[in-house]
Length: 385
Image (tube, rainbow, N blue to C red):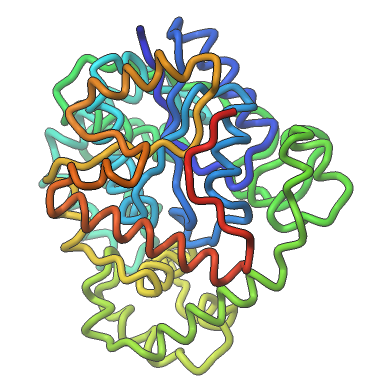
């Protein structure tokens, strides 16, 4: 059986996600789609607006055969680590044939070419990037300059989904395995577009307008019934982030990915401000608001660089959140061929090495924090849809 993998957040699952799943199955020629999805918090430092098991259920109802959890150590990390962790786990499945992802433009050759350039010219790229940053240029523009300086096509990296696609390609190349890439053009609103559209709005717009009747046009009916006003939960989460910032030290903050070059001191100096003002004041050309939010989230969840590096170099696990009933036997049998244990019951965790057990403990801790913030009824076992 050939498997098509998809790396995702589905926060929440919407029409655009269903579109990608539909075309991934059609164009890949694979028999099954296995997603690996962030659990309770996301790469932009946001709290997920729906329980991870329900989001996984939505994905299965929307076209996936199985949804695995992406460990929180990778889900709340810069794009390179996010991609590396996800590809590491997916590529442990022998029958993984293709990795599909949404993008603004570009084909498989474009993404692999860009990835090879960045891997082969890593030091030259880093030097050019450092020079531009030292001149006070923004990170995005500095990154584009450095990529162009090693012969890259800047247009490919001018949009966020394309940038993430290049990170997927880099991670695939580093596995040394013959995994195809399947870029699928996004439809509707762009990434991060905060305005609700008629059918294909961004997840950001949907999260910001959960009580709007227009949301119903942008998500499947089985998702809409599980969406509720998340305003109070978001405020509570932001308060938790401020509290944990006040309880840590600048030195401790430097142990988090991306918290360097003085931003740790800046954040500590801002700790008495409201959450929104902290983000606004700390954001600059060098430090995007997403990066600041991610640092605060990682601090709250106690996710550190040393942990992520340990997990990336260790055997891990496959943790299914939901599986399609009709294909459960075949898919779970395929997952069982992985070099990592498949966690379908509590006793399976006894198979984990020390690093994997530590990684799983972080996942459990993150989910507990999500439950405490949201006061939602707990769901704690794989869902068969």
